[in-house]
Length: 442
Image (cartoon, rainbow, N blue to C red; front, side, top):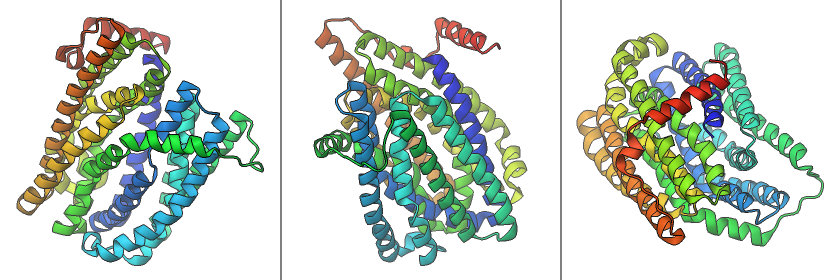
């Protein structure tokens, strides 16, 4: 599993570099205010996509791991659900803009309506990606993501040079989301021998997918709100330029998560497909240790270099992002553990625990943001995020150990996982890491 995680991490590293390049291009062409407006609209769209996913993607991975349903039936269920829910959410996006307009300062109705067209595409692409993960086609998954990231960067440079407007950036984003969706569908059609002229869903499978997915879906939505609701609050309380500064801080800080997210991507289908409860618990703990140690190293580097790195890369106009970056880093480092633990929980059939963790964190996050943003601006938002991330991690560790204890009792197998097993890297971990590098000829 570690080798697959390394491959996925390298691919995600390339993806992050491309994603960061795209943010840099937008920042350079649109400036802090334009960047902020674009991010506010994108936040609304991605929030609605998170709501509309209904947990079906996770259910696809889980049910295919159990071999409970045919992949072709799940495929068509995913397509139908994405289209129907996506169209409904376009309307909800416009109503949200109309009735919660103060949260969208600087954004016009036309901009929101335009970007909302990408919702069905994003829903469909997300569900298609779940099949690639379920089939453990990590290389294909990463190639498509990297291809889209590269094409997006090229198109941003070309067309924003001609027309440096928010609408231009939105149109490019919509087209690239559509291309990603289509490429993934083409791959899946070839992979499973599907005929697009004979669509056939399975209502029972869809209902079971919704039943499973919704257990943890509220948690996923609240999780997303934990990550991005601060942008809307900043726009409400401090304006779009402040959102632009904060978006750069989060882009840099959250680059740390690519290690934990890479491991989590590989861990979820592995745990879903395995009945070895001892190995699942121990592999999760080991993944946490390696991810946490790596995150600390990268976090220290960013803390020491951020005040030079941000102006150099994004432009001197974004120097105000540095304090927010520094306050974000502790929480981001600690939260790297939560990504991995959540994958273990869902893979073991406990998606509702994600909801519990996210809800606790969300309450703290909203309360602290409303208190600290008027006093400290984006630095206050960063502190609120760090505190909520830390609370999420403490909650996830507690529930992880609770699951391990339950599994131990049910199977009559002794599984001992201490806090040090989760956060302190061990000598055996170094050996595993060295072996992986040797396989890559390093």
